[in-house]
Structure formats: C-alpha cells, structure tokens
Image 1 (cartoon, rainbow, N blue to C red):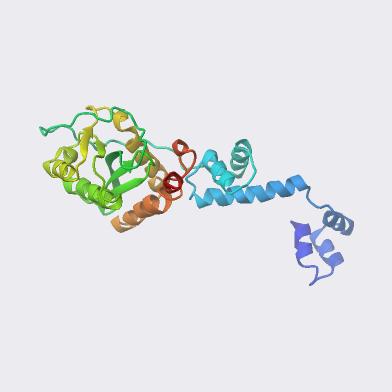
Image 2 (cartoon, rainbow, N blue to C red):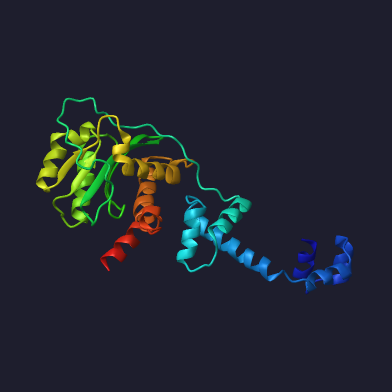
Length: 286
C-alpha cells in the first residue's frame, strides 16, 4: 500500500522524501515497481472481477453452478471448480435457504378434480401443461398473496396475480393473464393443489370457458405439485429472505422485478440446459 501511494504521487513529491516519511527504502520501492504480477496472477484477477460481476448481476441469488454457466455462456473459459473456489475465497455466497409453511386449505366440501398430471412434469411443447400455486408475503402493512401459473415446457411464469385476500379472484386473474399472454390456448392441463380457490365454481367455470382441463394433487402431497413449490422456494430465498419491504407497494415491485425481469428472462435453469425460460423458448421456436 505504501509503494502504491508513492507511485500515485510521484509527480507531486520527491520519491526520496516520500520513502523517508513512509519508512521504506528507495531501492525497495524501485524493486517493487520492476516486479510485474505474473500472467497467472493477472488472469486470476481478471476472472475474479468477472465472477464478482456475474454474482452481483444475479443480485447475490446464484451459487457457483449458475455463475459458472453465466460465464460460460458469455464465452469465458473457466472451470466450475475454479469459480466455486474463487467465490469461496471472495466470500460470495448465494442467499441461504429457509423453510416456508404451506398456504393450502383443502378442508372444504367442494368437488375435487382427478390428478391428470400424476407427477409427470415434462411437456413436449408450450401450453400443454401448466402448474399453479399460491404463497403468502408479509409486509408491515399486512399480508399479500401471490398466485402463479408456470408452463412445464419452458418453466416460464405465464400468469400471476397479487392481492390482499386469498380468494378465487386471485387465481382467476392469474389464469386470465396466462390465457391472454399465451394467445388463448385450449386443451391445457392446469394442475393445482386442492385449495378452495381452485375448487371454486368461478375458477372451474373459467377453465371450462377456456377449454382447459383441471388436475389436482392428492390430499396433503406437496410432491404432486413440486415444480410450483420449487418456484416459490427459489423466489422467497432469492428475492424475499433478508430484504426489508416498507409496504405492499414495495413488495409488488419486488415480485414484478423477480418474475418479469429476472426469472423469466435471465435466471438459468438446470432443467433447461442452463438457459432462461425466454432463451429456451426462443431456441425451440427458432
């Protein structure tokens, strides 16, 4: 640090005087100037900057596998082990996991649809199978509820809605968004849990109007809707946990940023060959 200070101020002060004031030798300073960093050290420094940039571009949401894939996609030649090691040295850690409670209330007398999906989370094309779920979000002003629908082919969030109450309107609004956004598809299997919102007459009527097929998980079996559960887990870990939201409006902005800006367009998915939903759709359509 002393040598760097001297180098920075060479045009202002005499080197000999600065060496005397800082308690270093003149020969030591000039020897330091002659010793250039090794090529390996220079490359490592450049890669450290690129790793750091990729990590913060992901807003501290990504671990080493996704950071590595992001760099690989940019044409940067580096190994995943190297990225993991350098991230550990630099203290770059993805946001920690947390457990979250379920919101489903399946204790109701409403009719329940059969499990058409039966844990087959693959699809051969867009708009064949959608999965939906609801989660809760806490703010100082009170609860917000988020309903989403995800296309199993591209893992894209095709429809979502937020509200202060967990009603049938919440899931109907999310389905309407998905239907219009995906250009009014018919024949889609729409899989959800047995919550009263999905069993409601309003939601079931909307499915019939759109020519869609209702599918529901077995009672108390979260694995039957694993993709939607996984999305909410990632969302809360990457966008909610550790953050402070002053009000419902701030939470709404965070949800929009995560789904529309980050998740659908930029977040890399291992199930998609480390592409984002938008990239995956674009390549398949092309």
